[in-house]
Image (tube, rainbow, N blue to C red; front, side, top):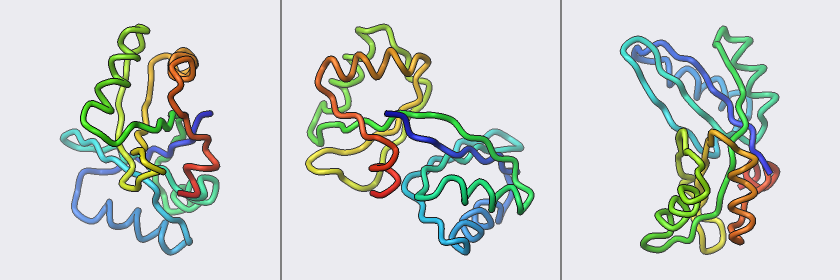
Length: 143
């Protein structure tokens, strides 16, 4: 029920993000979702792609520092308070959201949000108990 996310450490300077996307695109990798957080000197680019193994190989071969992390893809009702209801559920279960970002593509009548939790197994159990749909990696990579 978890999704593998790729994290790329980037120097915070012009052209580095473009370089990553060109390398991945040249290797036939399609981006499914991404977020970029920056500090003064470096940024962390987090990616969900259609072929993680190949993307990691390409980036490492081109000198990038790359890591992988497990995250959870949750279907959120695409209506006002859809996200708030899920966050309330997680808060009531004592689960902390470390970070999150959304897919740009809708899945059925729902949006897809990628979560990194402090306790992923506890979060998955709480979401499943409440009937919230969690997407497996295979579905997310193919969206």
